[in-house]
Image 1 (cartoon, one colour):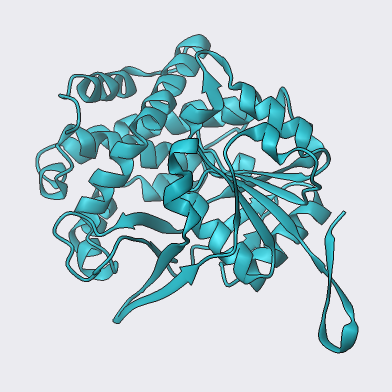
Image 2 (cartoon, helix red, strand yellow; image 1 turned 180 degrees about the vertical axis):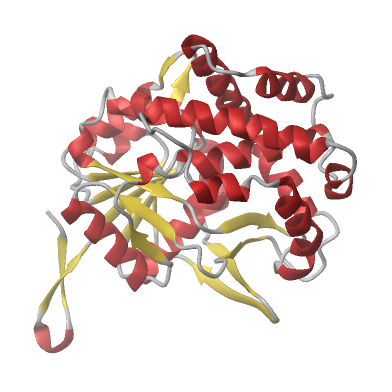
Length: 345
């Protein structure tokens, strides 16, 4: 059931009610554009963040060749525990937390089951990238309710170290061209999600089945990010020596494991092409001059924050590969190099 409001000339319009779980770099961007679409947005956050979020947020959309476009984001509701979302009717629920937040040790975190119950038949928009995340969540949430999503934007808490263009703290984000957020699942639910996001100005498209395509770019991303972290987040160091070749080998192992996991006969050609060390080296050389954000500090700060998610992801590739007798040597070595690093300051 949706809330109803009087529109122009007294006509009745429906208001979509959305619960966004998490209000970090991903959650704030989705919530902001859902609100711009006219949705009633509620953020589920930890109690320690309530006071900080109560006064509203400053968003800064980054644009190539232009100054950031600043906007205030206010008017959302806040809850600090899953049970506080009970007693309301929800249309869509976005899981924007990290893969690590889904877990309580080796079990699913209790909050997931609570949200599944209190949200009743609401669409669950599932955005977590790790290989075993969906199976974990679908054990307590009916798959007929789930829309799978793949994030297509970059976002971070600004300013980054050394960044001087922002006079105040804000959430900076960029929609790269030709990189919309992609969604798949039950047709009516996917259409409702995509239409709402598009109405709010967030690039979004429907895909046939991203559960069979997203694992490959995720495998490449994790391998190269782990290699970058092993080089203290230095793009120059990553480009030197044989680090990219080692990362490419680990990515090939991860993609083969992902293909086996989803029952695919081969790794898609475009994923194999994207894993070319020569192309990656060229992209790393020119990307800092093209993207409208300080790339190296962004990668270091953002992916250090989700470091536990990355380690869980690498571990899952190794465990699945070992269980199926697939090569994991490069993945294991990469994971060991990252594990041996001193704690991030």
